[in-house]
Amino acid sequence: MSKLTTSYVHGVSDTPLLGDTIGVHFDKIAARFPDRDAVVVRHENIRWSYAEFKRQVDAVAAGLIALGLEPGDRVGIWSPNNSSWVVTQFATAKAGLVQVNINPAYRLTEVEYVLNKVECKALITAERFKSSNYIDMLRELAPEIAASAPGQLKSKRLPALRTLVRIGSNDQQGFLKFEDLAGMAKDSHKKRLSELETVLQFDDPINIQFTSGTTGSPKGATLTHHSIINNGLFATQALGYTEKDRVCIPVPLYHCFAMVVGCLGCLTSGSAMVFPSEAFEAKATLEAIQAERCTSVYGVPTMFVAMLADPDFKKYDVSTLRTGIMAGSPCPIEVMRQCITEMNMKQVTIAYGMTETSPIITQTSIHDSVERRVSTVGRAFPHTEVKIVDSNNRILPIGQQGELCARGYLVMHGYWNDAEKTTDAIDPGGWMHTGDLATMDEDGYCNIVGRIKDMVIRGGENIYPREIEEFLYQHPKVESVQIFGVPCPKFGEELCAWIKLKNGQSATEDEIREHCKGQIAHYKIPKHVRFVSEFPMTVTGKVQKFVMRDSMIKDLGLTLQKTA
Image (cartoon, rainbow, N blue to C red; front, top):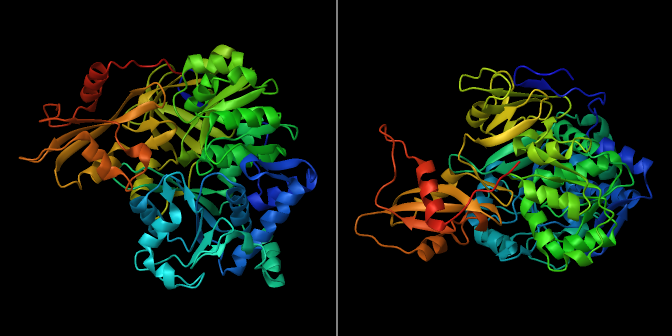
């Protein structure tokens, strides 16, 4: 590759883009590697070959058709990691249904919003996860469930929702059981499933993933067969996967990281997907690596920190590890080095992207030098264009800081039913504006140096302050509020709230946090709360969040980490 003079690059590749839908490619891989492990779910004691996995997926896909669901209908899934989640991902794709990923940490306000925003006709849900009882929450949102036959829900607050499917074997009034879906299909439904192979197109929307909204509500990034299966292909091609690789996936399936880079990445190479637990646990992940002889493991930096810090870390055999991906938030250089030296991940890579880009835009390669792999986020993905631009959208010379933009097959269709926000994110030239400040060197390697938007990344979760600000404005004592992030050694960043109370009012930090509990996800609840009489402002009246952040860093005695 010739040396660059401007911050624009096109990821050239000899590997063509896949022209299959997810279902068609799934069948090809299952036929090629029928006896190899496809899915291992250790907390459920499940081990499926590709042939058995295909049998499970086809049966559930036909069952979804038997429910009366048609291509393009939205089906939500609200659950931690389990075998039903993985089956649902591939079954909805085969049936042409749009799977809607719902964060397991969502509470009442959030789940009501997303179900109605995309008009989910069906919802597949776990019974509970950690402190969230999903069944009770749904009954609170839709008390009509108590008198509804399965598949016949008519709810005032959830008007589009008709069918509720519960993961688990216990009977629940108004719910079908997930394990019964496979037996619902008749020959006509199986025939329809077969016909859909030639009807569905790879540009069809197949997945909606919600990102926290800058204007107070989550936005539904709409992705296609084409965007996510090819992103999975090139992510794992960079890691050198073959059918002999066994990939430990402790990251949550509702994220692109697990669903795309994990599941679809493994599918494209015939690798095994290994799920250690329903949510990340350091010990369970280390046990899975050892027991399943995993060659790769994924995680956000905090997960690797937790594994390395486990008191029994030295007792686990991680010698089979070769590679993996660290992504989801800025990656501390020292943690990368420890993964290489202490976890045997000599070919570990860093990936950078966003939900709206399916998700990976740039990635380092196993063939890159260690220095490149610990200090950059790599180069543009194959068949992907990347540029760094100034505030006037003009491409900058190499080395100069500007906004990173991406274009290509990986860019989302748009935000579901939100043309205005889509236009704000994707310009007329088809470029996705990430909002991240970056530089590019003469070899095309990129560095993320900051964020134009004030998004906070806590343990891999993207949090937009405006959403929490608008929620806290609902508190009767709050006059105004500003939310921002401060450094945290465990999670990368934590939320801080500066609050101005109404005249004559008083409140405590605990009172503010209690107001949030049960209404917004736990990771969106501010850890630090300060009550102030005024906010630092510019002469034009704009709030200066960076001044607040610097003040809190000083008051709390925090330090900034050096990151790639």
